[in-house]
Amino acid sequence: MPRAGLSPEVLVGVALDLVDEKGLEALSLAAVAERAGVAAPSLYKHVGSVGALRELMAVAVVRQLTKLCAAAVMGRSRADAVAALMREYRAFALANPGRYAVVPPNALQVPAVAAAGAELLGVFAAVLRAYGLEGSAATHAIRRMRATVHGFVVLEAGGGFGLPEDVEASFDQVVTMVLRSLE
Amino acid sequence: MPRAGLSPEVLVGVALDLVDEKGLEALSLAAVAERAGVAAPSLYKHVGSVGALRELMAVAVVRQLTKLCAAAVMGRSRADAVAALMREYRAFALANPGRYAVVPPNALQVPAVAAAGAELLGVFAAVLRAYGLEGSAATHAIRRMRATVHGFVVLEAGGGFGLPEDVEASFDQVVTMVLRSLE
DNA sequence: CTTAAAAGCTATGCAGAGTAGCTTTTATGC
DNA sequence: GCATAAAAGCTACTCTGCATAGCTTTTAAG
Image 1: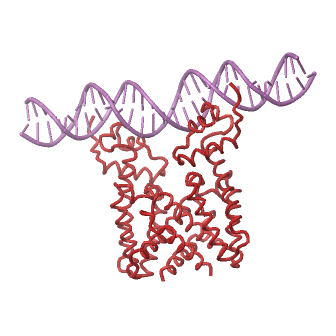
Image 2 (image 1 turned 90 degrees about the vertical axis):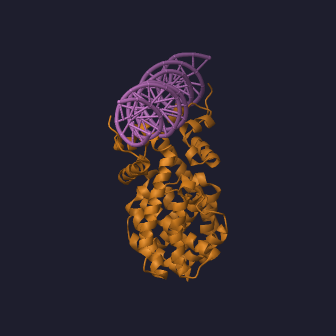
Image 3 (image 1 turned 30 degrees about the vertical axis):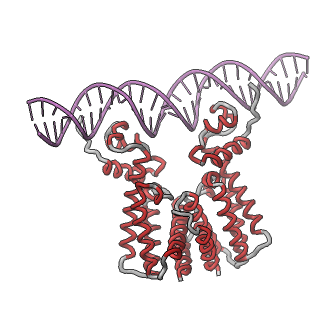
């Protein structure tokens, strides 16, 4: 049988396509193997376990999100930048709920994901510098932003907001709320 | 073999003890059956499936949380009540992360959990009445509160805040942020 | 004191993670 | 060109978990 040309990177791509289409619950080695055109045990030549695959996926997702957020805040500052960051973050999570869900809440404590996570946090820290926030004040501000936007998108993507009645307006108010807390 | 005296209620209690001790990932029919002193298939005489058991657990958890939150806001109003609600909510989720995690984000869309979820939301709505918020303004305010507090506790319980450096202060600021958004 | 429903059991099927051990492909050194 | 070893595939198997089938035992009710 001809070689399939697999690699950890290729498998991560296949797995991300899978969760994009079918959701994170559908992630299994059997499903990834089928899409890769290979028998399930063959995957172990490239990734150590399902957990390891998920970590690699998380790294890719965090990097993608970091890139998008960094681009969104470019050329903006203060309220403008914070709002752009929050909106971009939400847009990504909603457009790619399966991918977003693969990022563990404790990404920074997971060695494989820590570096990528720190870069994303760096973008959060950067938009706060314009407010003169440093040290523990910056930590608190980052936590407010993360908790708020993460909580919102988890509920929204999870169907937690009954009818989509004015969810946009709700998010606008959330952004305003965070901005006011930064003054 | 003597009867074990099981019922859906008893099994929910056993399962909640289990997730309290070992976390939600440890929830399995085999583990519940062992604690109940019964073979795994016997559980199907009382609950229809793992999913159904989780729904029953979610109902119990939401009811417990509702009771605690309702008690916490009794005799308080406005900022006092909102802060008490948020603090009680957080305290419950942190003290019982396994239980809290069993509640799906879309509890209101899950028929079995909808009624209990609506009661919890009722407590949120009640503390906002003192602010004169009704209709869509109340909806937006509830969403701000839910997203913020849920996001915070998910990150905190999930180990998302590196060192526990001043997490209390962070939460204080989150509460203040929400309160300001209600003025 | 009979009897039927309720509540247990064992056996079985199926899916997913992971391991063992074999075969085939392919890159590399001669 | 060709031998050969590592890389990459495969089948077969184990283990755990969910779930169903069908049998047996307990127990409550007439």
